[in-house]
Image (cartoon, rainbow, N blue to C red; front, side):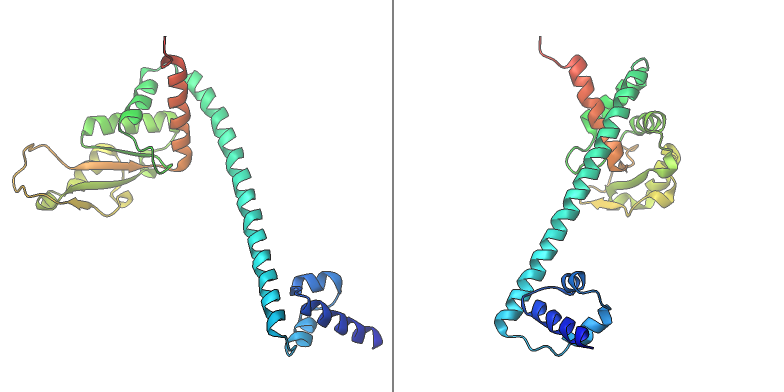
Length: 224
């Protein structure tokens, strides 16, 4: 009984010093329910409450820093693996003109800002070539590609989503909500125009393309 009294007194002392429940339990081996019962009616001064809060906030900050560091370490390790695989594929694809064509097309028309793969164009043949490139060198089937159509509201009746789905083999279920761009035109200047299609892949695919682009620069882009 005396030992329990001493444990309770020690728990109260540590709590007033700003210790968290976890901190106290690491020093005093007892059930958390027992500790909660001991501390539930503990009167704290305003200074003790502020100090306890500052310790709790500090622990949260340390936890966030630790989690961010762990995430960064995992990300760098993943990027190193992708770079190694990208170098191997670059050597393998070097004899196929389609390999360099796809890299060049993305270099010219692809997204480089948000660290994810995005390619937009209104030319169906170009999109077909790009999707064949994605399938062959990134190993991603059209059924796994996300898409979104950008067009003008007066031409919504044409159901261009169906047109692009057939051309690209991307299921209609993979299409996001169509974006309608403002226009004052009621008649198309180009009757064959079916809007702009944007296709999207994951960040790993983006890393592959950026690594390949850099390798292409290293091979051919050096100044004389």
